[in-house]
Image (cartoon, rainbow, N blue to C red):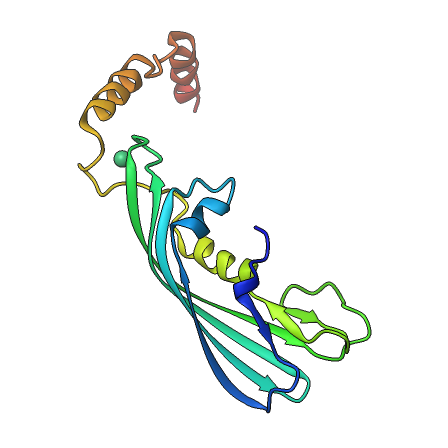
Amino acid sequence: MDDLKEHTIPFSGLKDGTYQHRFLLDREFFLRAEGDGFQGGMVTADVTLDKQPNLLVTNIHVDGTVSLSCDHCNGPLELGVTGDQRQIFQLNVEEDQGDEELVGLDASTHSVNLTQYIYECIRFALPVRRLHPEGQCDPEVDEALQKLAIEHEPVPDPRWEALKGLKNQRP
Ligand SMILES: [Zn+2]
């Protein structure tokens, strides 16, 4: 996901201390995120920024709902998301070590952009399988899928059964 300019936080000139930022992520934000199947959403991201002499610690808290498709019936699905993520930036670093936990910023960097971290926080807060609660899937699709499952139920292979029988007879 591309960095959005509203998620850029300037830190040079900030006194050491804690700062709060709040971002609202609406339908437009989720439609920009390609490939994850989002169809909309309304999520609040609260960011606590702790500025220290050579460190910038950001704690992101997301809370809201996202619109997706159900993995089972493909019908529209609203899911609640709540999650936290911490990202630490090391300031005045000569070379970024490529560490995901600790991102190095050189002395010429004066701001951080949090779009990708906020987005990751939302993605990690979602379940792997995105499903309607039991019994709330689209009934027509559900019925069709059940029929399909019955037709494709594996038939036991008689030869395999015979082999198993032989094995059991051995002492
Ligand atoms: Zn469903």
